[in-house]
Image (cartoon, rainbow, N blue to C red; front, side):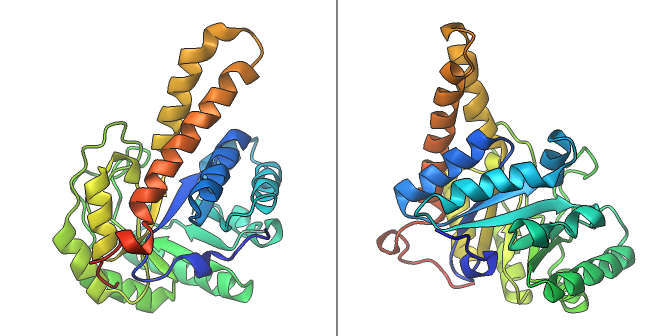
Length: 282
C-alpha cells in the first residue's frame, strides 16, 4: 500500500503510535505489527538515526518506505527531532509526510522564529510540521526534570508559528528503561483545551499502559515510542547470541520481540472502537 500522509492519521480524539526506526529490522517489526493488528502506524526516523547511518537519509528512508509499501498496513513516514535545516529540506524528496522540527534548545523568541520558518517551508512542500515547546526530560541531558509546558504559552506558540502539532512536556522522559513515569493529566486536559492542534507525547516508553490510555483519552494524540523497542530487541539478541555466528540467528528473534512489543502498544494506544468507549474528544 502506498504511504499515507501523517495528517490522515493524527486526528483529535484518536491515539496513533509513532515508532522510531533505527535499522531495517525496526521497520519490518513495526509494519508487521500494524498489519497484524489492523492499526495504522507512523514510522519515524530521527536525526540521530540518520547520523548513525553515516549522515545519509536516503538509504534508511528508502528501506523503510519499501517495507511500508510492500504491506497492506496504513503507514506514514515522519522525520523526527530535526535541528539541521538541510536535513529537514531533504524530507520532501524521500516520501516523508511530516517533520518534527526541534527548536527547543533556543530561547522562546528564537524558537518561534525558526519554527515559523520551518512551518512555512513545510506548507510550501505539502508536509505536516510538529514542533516542541517545553522541554521533555532526558533529551541529551539538556532538559531539567520536572519541566512542564504552560498552556497559555503553548497556545501563543502555535498561533505565532502555524505548526500542525505540538510536542509538550507533561511528565515523560526520553530513553526511560523502566515504565514508571506519572503523567500530569490535569495539565494534559488544560493543554487540550488551550491548544488548537494535536498534542504529541514524547518519551512514551517509560509510561505505563494505564497512563498511556488515560493520556489518549484526555487529548494526547501522537504517542512517540523508541526505547521500548530497543529493550525488546537487545534482550532478544543477548538471549540468542550463542546460536552461532550467522546474525540472522539472533536478529530474527530480536525482530520478533520488537513486533510483539509493537502489537501490545498498538492495542494500548489505538484500541478498536468497542474498546474506546468513554474516551474524551480532543
